[in-house]
Image (cartoon, rainbow, N blue to C red; front, side, top):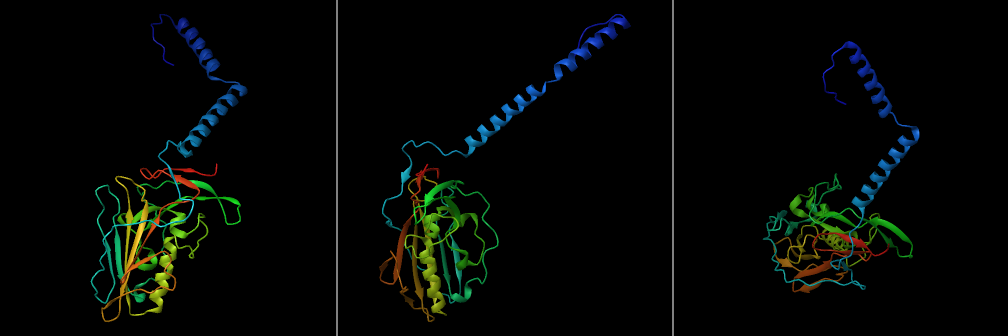
Length: 287
């Protein structure tokens, strides 16, 4: 508190200072009840702010629910295998006009695959990714909670052996990536998941040493959307002499073959969420 004015005598100065001190200390002290009330109000404001920042958006009609029955998508993407070299090659296209990953392609043999798992979780920001935890029902009908989506490289570390860069990573639902709505479980037998085809192609490579697999993965968007609507996979192979051949999987799942080339388009959905593909925001199906 700042005082202004001219004091003519020492007595007036002492009296004024005394009164000022009484005023300051009297106004500055609060009762325990007032302090408790003030702290309660601050706590309430903090809780409201925290709740607001983690709340999901309102359904304004721009959120799309997953199909009731699992299904695959369609694509008009053109695919051509990399030229055979006898060695491994990884090609990542530059980011597109919307600063989104466009595609990744790799040519590899089983000898090129890494012997260990990746070291770090992806921590950099990814367009369209949101850190949601939603409820879902497991196969027994029990309601549980799980993260809805993850930051996933288009081609897995088990193929590349290198940590993914920004131009290789897109947001995916756990259902698309691992075949289950749980972030703690995987289902490699689900043909509507990337894991199904990654597992099958891994097995094919192990059973065909010296053969080269060409694997192409691209996210598909509509317009300027940030969250890919689907992920399309293409693959073919070369024998040790460089002849392009068909990859005969034990179970092709939902893949379609066009001669020696195969492809499948997997939807980026999760049955426990409605997704706004323009922003990547989502709202839960189970409240």
